[in-house]
Image: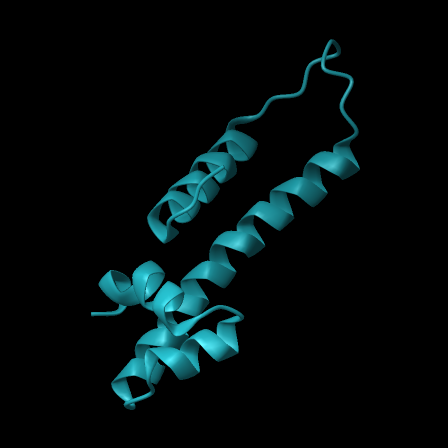
Length: 89
């Protein structure tokens, strides 16, 4: 399972590409609704992570501490800094 922001975004992009390239066959026996729901969820996850990076960039630009950002994203300030600091610089 991807851990870093880059890995999450790369994984989401890879999954989105797989969904886009997917051609169902009779042997697959996959529910089209389930496939569509998964495709949507993967894209939403990727979009949300990109919005998170943008929001943290704005927060840091306004002087918000990593502690405060960590509080808002549900982690410690240090964990938030480790995960996002190189993406928002």
